[in-house]
Image 1 (tube, rainbow, N blue to C red):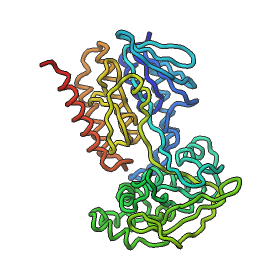
Image 2: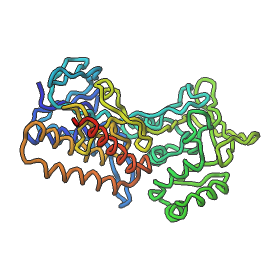
Image 3: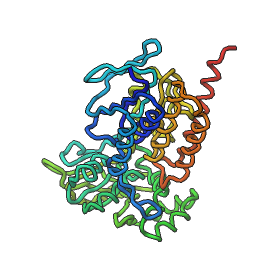
Image 4: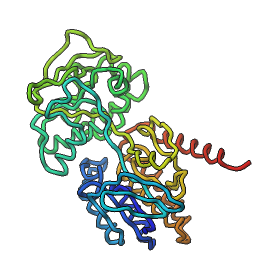
Length: 405
């Protein structure tokens, strides 16, 4: 029997483990991967102040902090079910069944696929897979690649691939179909890309992006967008071209591009071929919420956060007693925000377990989440603050409805 069990050894889970263990709680962290750190492991990018955010270094730091706090960490251990029995949460894994009164789900996020003709060829992968291969395992995914899908995640990983000596021939749109209208719409994609333009090394792009905020300017920008693309980190970014097919016999050899209208429709007869030996598909991220669903947690669809998220309050408590959430399961954001949420969850669990005098620290930790969010170098979803407000409103509605008359 543990005081706290945390599923997920990413930034949220590790910071929560350290925080709660430092308050004297007996903590177990479970993760299916062979290393702690989650998606943080693959991150490597330059921040606005010129310093580099090194995910491996940060992961190691969080892991060692958790170990020194006394938290027990079990890796290579998959959780396949959770259920409540009285006041106890049962966590079923491949190795054993564990019990706790406080269970934190810090399961992170997964990538959304974008179906493209030819995407079953060897050499086609998600953009996150290319990031892990390069930054974690130090294996180049290929010599020359094309990234399908233009969004903040794709832009950042493209720069990471370039730093590793991999040529990125282009970031380009997918051909519009019934499943990817937002990802294939040039104007909507431009709006997303403006939120990472300030990270570009080119002063022209950084300054020009400020003039593109009004909708009318974005429409003009798309209408007169250069056919050769606009270079960001030296990589051509195409908002008026889309991949219609990935080509190759036994493996990726090229992609077929076509010019698209400002609304995303393909212009017939404009096809061209770009040679490459690998292709990354960047469909964005969505919260991994299966375990929360199994537990019976109430959900709400919040597009501004990447999909369905379990309803929770600012203290990271869900509607189910003893069940908490933190990190990307609450909405797609950066690792620093996940770390801050983990601290709040850890303090809340300790307080609910009976540790006195933590309310002021919990309130301060909630403020720290907001401060971290406000100072983030970029957001995966531009309207994330609106999304968080929606969750809070739905939480309050749910709590009010459950109050006795």
